[in-house]
Length: 355
Ligand SMILES: Cc1ncc(COP(=O)(O)O)c(C=O)c1O
Image: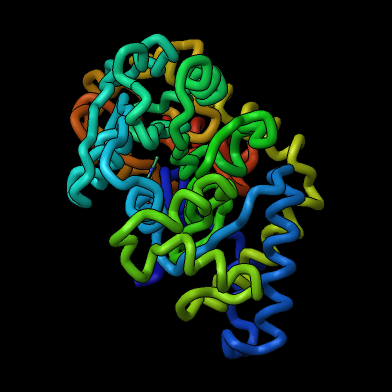
């Protein structure tokens, strides 16, 4: 079945044709000079685009692989898992399923986590804290910088950040954040097909990891780093996807990261205005995501709406987790443009009118 509609979804997202076409370049083996050059170039461009000199590690998995890698490589026993939505809950579960002792800090869904929420939960035995930057189930952008500063006033755990739906869509000012892991994947604001997880990793996390037992093999950050130093991947990497990543990084650097972040803010603004004219936004106003808007569904029949949109060449996403039935979501990230968002919103109005 051929699908011919633009994805305003929360991931995978719309991938431009020229980026997809980069994946058809001839295959190379992953222990060749040509591959070393490919990986070296990608790492250099990632450092430049994200304005960071943290270690870059890549894994042939979805982002969850590296979320698990952080837990397995960075924590012997105790972690604090912070959550205000499905993906915060997910990282807590990853901790529990890997046998770690997880102290949960749960904030209300739709509200941002505040530094004060962590008071009393973190102590000198806390080895790491997991926190989601952009909670994709609720459309809340958590104030990571304030939370990290609040923690660091009294304690010094590793700080692990899930940046899956914020990195490349929101300027996180990584250099100013005193964090140890920032994990993301290709299928969100990078606007690539799924299949590669990437993380910015601190030296401190890698040092700690050397002494952590049972790190496993596939997501062992220490082994990944050893290979990364030689511009190699620990296991066979998705070479075709890396061709596309290489081109996509060139495209993003050409656009300019400041312009890219501004474009995301503009698209988010348009969708928020639309939502306010209907049943409103799920997330609290001061912490709205620039990549995903979660809209109260009210009496809208979402299946009918999305069916009508698909017939017109558009697709949006349903609600997620505990608020699946009460909301729906629009992804406005990656390479989408404000003009395309306006087109979507106009069509949403027309489909709703006809329903
Ligand atoms: C915030 C967040 N974290 C983690 C994930 C899981 O990522 P993946 O499916 O790439 O493992 C998602 C996926 O939607 C997400 O939005």
